[in-house]
Length: 262
Image 1 (cartoon, rainbow, N blue to C red):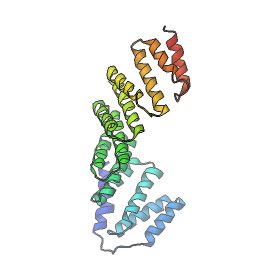
Image 2 (image 1 turned 90 degrees about the horizontal axis):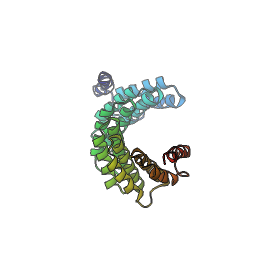
Image 3 (image 1 turned 180 degrees about the horizontal axis):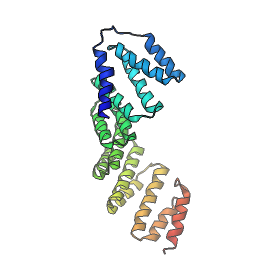
Image 4 (image 1 turned 120 degrees about the vertical axis):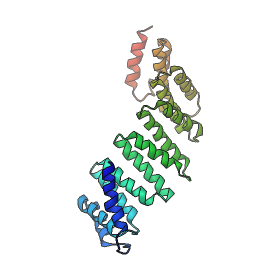
């Protein structure tokens, strides 16, 4: 990965800076590269955008050219590692612009998650969150992705902390409810049953939460009661969500099982 990144930077960035050609504001090269991409000639398109970057160290279409190279790598060739390497090179060029840098780090995190490089994804997300002038929606989305990534790393303490932080700071009711639910789910993974139960009960007392989150929370709470062998209480909970849980068959199956226990 690092070796390929060096190759990308040397060939498309450092070589470009050493080029004496003037800026080409709308060259035939990039026009042809765009047309090739639209027509599905991706190899020709890729070569064209690479040539544009090499020949135009100050070109106004450089960001666009880099973006197309990312698309070709990740979406056309399904090579997320190559896509991540190109994004790293993009960040070296545009990292001084906060609005672009924040987006690039988010894209990079998403690319790393695709390839299972969760530690690298965490680093990219944390960097993306450092930039100012982000909306609450952007911050919530990135922190949610960060919490999910911590959980994939089995760093449950940081996942719980992050979900809790989102729930306390967000103004969005659905985001708050989902964060509490996911925090409770993460608590069950470390068998912190009492705290998970407390969070779910808090969630179920909230006004205005969506039907789907309510049903999922009830189902999880029923699982906790079942684990404590409180079968009747678990069944009573499940009866509330027979018609609202996303998978009614799962509720009915569990109800049949529980009713045989008392």
